[in-house]
Amino acid sequence: MSAALEPGWLNVLQEEFEKDYMKNLKSFLLQEKESGKTIFPKGADIFNAFNHTPFDQVEVVILGQDPYHGVGQAHGLSFSVQKGVTVPPSLKNIYKELADDMEGFQIPSHGNLTQWADEGVLLLNATLTVRAHEPGSHQGKGWEAFTDQAISQLSKQKEGLVFLLWGRFAQNKAILIDEQKHTIIKSAHPSPFSAYNGFFGSKPFSKTNSILVAHGKKPVNWQIS
Image (cartoon, rainbow, N blue to C red; front, side, top):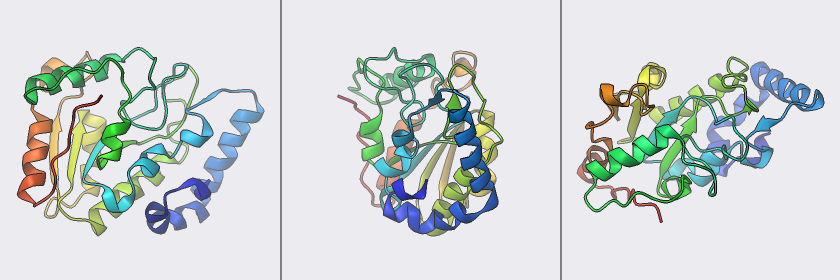
């Protein structure tokens, strides 16, 4: 699995691939395939978050929980779906908040967030695969240890990052982040079940850009074409 990882990430995560949990995870995924289960995203897309946002270029982290489990949705970036697929409710709410938060933001016609990833926004799910139509089906199989290590390495080796932690699950990852070196912005999750409990009006995107600029960094262009 490690061969597909961007060199900067491979440098900091290589040891993880030799650990027992990762070998067990690999065996589990092979077993899933051999038993005829469909897994999302496809193999080439599993590490997309890392490959679109090299370790050296990460400036912002948006943490998700699980890949989407519907056909054609997941492609390795949290909250993002492939073009041609209906924009999911949480992402619709993210766009709604963006339009309220960032002057001139035009809501895109699709849900592909690759442009953010290429801008230095790491769109990382805690679990990187899922069984088709079975949300949470690959949780607790090892992915969380791997992605926790990714967050820890970012915290240790970089400075001035902004972590957007939406909802309780993401906020539980705050223990991995050194708040002396980085900024954490917390709010409710953008899901329709919780967006009105503190996601709408939280202005995470303008706050993020203000923090980046204060650190002498380039603001994110949140507009997606």
